[in-house]
Image (tube, rainbow, N blue to C red):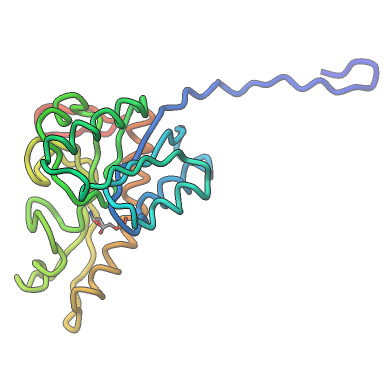
Length: 217
Ligand code: GRF
């Protein structure tokens, strides 16, 4: 529209409703970084409202602080029971007021109270093609088993260990000379695109979960 020499631009973009996401991480935090980078790049319509960690040494803490994400440290070592720890964790999670919790290298199994309260709203990244090689040291399990293809899985969290409905899987070859470390690096590169994509799909309301099956709209 042109009026007396001035251009008035009309904003025709639809307002984007941003979801609130928060992360749980226990260590390095490279998957958390991939998610916050994708948010900063505008690829995920979300704001990150918090990082919660059970480990005061987690490098994820610095990654969060660098971008102004509030950090809550709940040091597992300070609690005499898992129940007492999870009571604090639950309070911290409520405090994030998040639509989605991303378990980005969170190395503990969540108890039933938390799983129940946030049912369908927690995602985990696991470095194996589930249901193969659930649990710890998944890459080493894959090497020892002798599989030729490995990968990663993003899944919804349920009461089991790495058993929830599968959102995305990515595969990589296992090469003859691979060891745990070289395979983990190859899988990790896939994790860094699979997890942000799964978070994006959630934030765009494009995941439809029926029983164990996740349909992407
Ligand atoms: C990743 O391999 C993830 O799949 C697993 O733990 C590792 C965490 O790495 N659950 P990072 O902390 O995200 O760098």
